[in-house]
Image 1 (cartoon, rainbow, N blue to C red):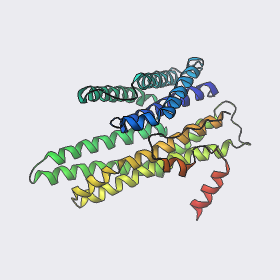
Image 2: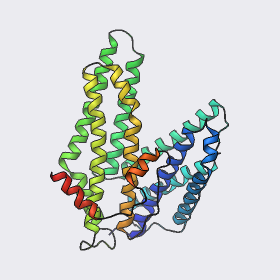
Image 3: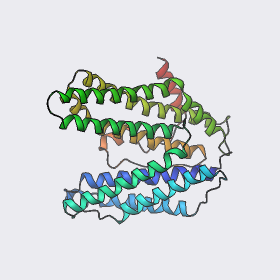
Image 4: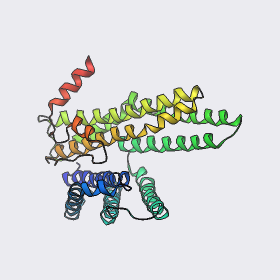
Length: 311
């Protein structure tokens, strides 16, 4: 059995990291626009108050599992969530630091994230969609590093390096397709959710599990579509189109951000919590309006999704 407290801790730690990253992105987007930051001070302070509130929740809740591997994963998730939250809370809203200091701060944040992922990766089960998500991002990052080699290579060697880049993406695309075809991560989600304390198949819980699976499938498909386009341009040696596609990476990021937000919300609903309104403040207003962040989870959405997929 998975204790409800452990689910709450896991999701709250994830929310902390998510909300902190969202605020950090917002401040970075507007670091050279102090007037706009000042206009948004109320929104920024509201987010900071929420972060402080979630920190107290984690401080007041103890990990229950006796499984050492799961305990380590939850403990590290809490430590990481608290660390990134502390960083963004202490960071000035108007960044007057010079370029070198800004670069140093970004480097520290990146190193913290890399160390966290390196440590926690093996604490997830292989079929856990969170582990698969980490693997996808890791392989995509390696492929993009290969593209940097392409851009700096001169003469006939450029095509050779571009073929390496394309092959790396093809391997990643195959990896994602395998996950979607075998559906092992779907079985993992079902088995995990069914063992959560208080799970009731006669309530809306089954629909929530379907919704969680649906969101993971949509995340993996979004990556697959993005990678498929890069492969197509790579095979045609169209470096301009590849560069153009990578410039749209932010759209993929926002797509995933909104879906991970809903994943966390669904897990909280599964253990009986109601979730406050969380907007993606680093996203354009139109994205938040379109996806209606304030709407409470409605199990009927699953019936709508299933209907749309069957047509």
